[in-house]
Image 1 (cartoon, rainbow, N blue to C red):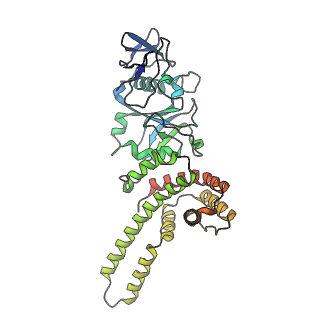
Image 2: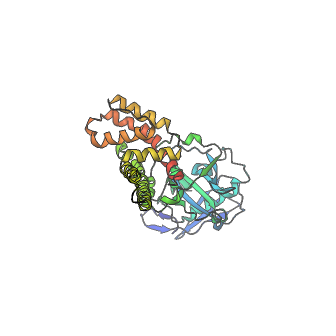
Image 3: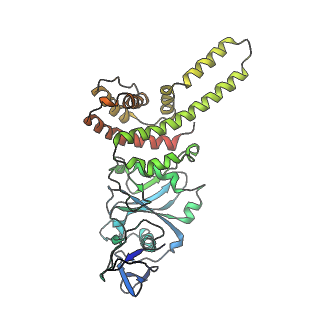
Length: 360
């Protein structure tokens, strides 16, 4: 479905596919007996067909027009696309305004936005004046443009596998018009000229909760809910660790000779250990080797301020915050709940790293 527009009587019309008028450097779209012209700011490079690319919309409140990134995929070689603000299509003042690699892709992105392609768009009222692409899209919209040939060479490529990694840097997938993102990701500053995307672990790709979490849940303006929602990912993985450990205990039990009493007791102790949540969380963090010192420090600052026992490592610290939120929520003041915001931002990065690295 293409773009929609309203006339002055509020009647809706579908716009025709865009045509580029090179003499005027505008795109022309028609409806009823009217013609809409939308200017194109950048140097025109009509190198590629729109069929050679897929375009996805994101929002990110931290992005500026000069924030234009080449996109790479974690397990493949070579650039697979570009990630940039819609503002980069409206200005010639950024660093890529004359880039021979970016300009053909920018022209394709502009065309695909004007085609609609199922994107969530605004419906402006046409009063005869020239329109801008921002009459249909928001100024904090971001465009992920990927080459089809490039992603077809990636085994089992699906965008949803990369949504947690993109969210870590502040990019939230836009699947409806009112999608907003007030979050300013602390990790966004890590990006320079490139962004390398990593998919989540093969073991977790079928878990729909993970995609809902990074598409909808985390943007709700409730920091306690955000923390507990993130912690659910830890719950998902440590339950997987429990099932794996339980299977190994049963396997070991079946192999023990009848008279080996000591080994039976050892297996019993192993079984007792895997039923406890805290050791499984520590095992998860230890095995992944994820850098979590900032998370530990933030958690312990809150725990110490409230008079709770601090954690000896990041796993025990995050576990203690979770337990006290669940069992002693009444003791958290408004200021202490606000302290959770820094913890949540750090926790997002740790959880995403765990989702990518988890192997069992």
